[in-house]
Image 1 (tube, rainbow, N blue to C red):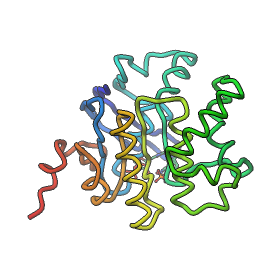
Image 2 (image 1 turned 180 degrees about the vertical axis):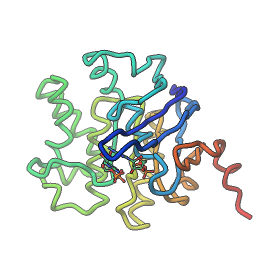
Image 3 (image 1 turned 90 degrees about the vertical axis):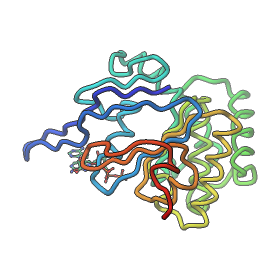
Length: 232
Ligand code: ADP
Ligand code: ADP
């Protein structure tokens, strides 16, 4: 589903250059939950943002479903991005909109009709267990509930791929577990491929089929989670 070839990311500014990713190569199979782990500054955030071109790779190819995203024009990229959902550490919800209106937002942008939006939003809120919070505002919800809204919103355009940027890093262990269960559910029931970045080994161990270890911009190890992290 995803092929990364010779991916490099260099940030240039007046202070000089920062090399965040160096010649990264690997593949992610359709249906997998794939984790990227590494310490702060390893390049995880740069990597996941290159997967939907929120960050433009300096070199290399990002091939998603046979399409090299780095070769697309603006319109084609907008289309391709609809099929890639993303959730964030800070949830990134619109504070002035209700839960239902946050989930509706990507559907409005896609020009979906009002009645279809209503049905889809109800279905998504059911899926994440927040049907009773539809008319609440994000500030009235717990962190875990806000991330559930994030998940519902990310799934609105029925993506094949969900990117998770430290999605549980601001949550307590119990809430983290419940969000990881939800992600596992989505992966199994809807067949959505999930790519997540984290600095927490437990997250990888709990849900990832495969893992890549990133250090200073290099992949230093990659394989099945049980093989990469065998308990002593
Ligand atoms: P991680 O997510 O693993 O903490 P990042 O991808 O955020 O790693 O950062 C990798 C390196 O790139 C770090 O040295 C960071 O300071 C640098 N970096 C990230 N974003 C930028 C940017 N927009 N401009 C300059 N340097 C950046
Ligand atoms: P997170 O850990 O939540 O992913 P980061 O601290 O890595 O967030 O980055 C937050 C934002 O700041 C990103 O847009 C990233 O590109 C940018 N950024 C990170 N490091 C640097 C840096 N050294 N210089 C400039 N921008 C940076």
